[in-house]
Amino acid sequence: MPTSVDSAHVIRMLERAAAVMAENRLVLIELDSLIGDGDLGITMEKGFAAAARTAQEQGSAGPGTIFMKAGMTMAKTVPSTMGTLMATGLMRGGKAVAEKTELSANDMKTFLSAFFQGVMDRGKANLGEKTLLDILDPAVKAMQAYTGADVTEAWKEAEKGAAAGVQTAKALESQHGKAAVFREKTRGLEDPGGRAAYLLIKSFAETLAS
Image (cartoon, rainbow, N blue to C red):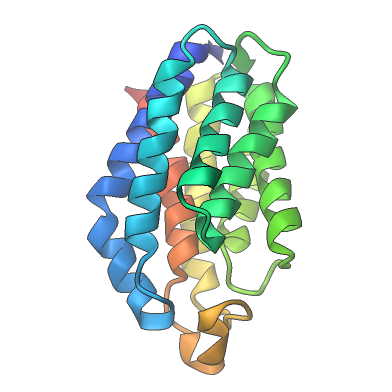
């Protein structure tokens, strides 16, 4: 029962995120082609690959700093809407735990909450508008509801919340970006950015579980 994670864990988390985004490249492209530009898979693969490389170069830094540096690299590498939002989340989350040398379950709650707030602030979207916020919000709430000290279990709860959010968001109507053009036609479809957010949380949970 790990009660904290260190910099080495964070590096592996970002490496796993890069691998998962690469594995799901075509899935994200297909989803994004239905209501977007169709390039999300390429963006996520390229962005997280760069973030992982930067993380590997920051081995002596603290966990929060690694998240921040990875986010900064991602922002430069893929300055698209989704790339910027994910990068902002990593930077904001990392900054929130920057003083920590190891991250407890409560620190991870702080990280994920700050990640969510960063995405909301940067994207200027609200809940219920069929964006990744509708996946991140239930993930944050599920992790916050976990009262134990096991970091792995905390992320497993976040994954469950995110998975539920993916399904719930299908009923919503897109309000932002190219998807907003389709409006009511987006009901019943999965939000591509939401899937990417779920994959990120899933990859973090998988890393710690292994």
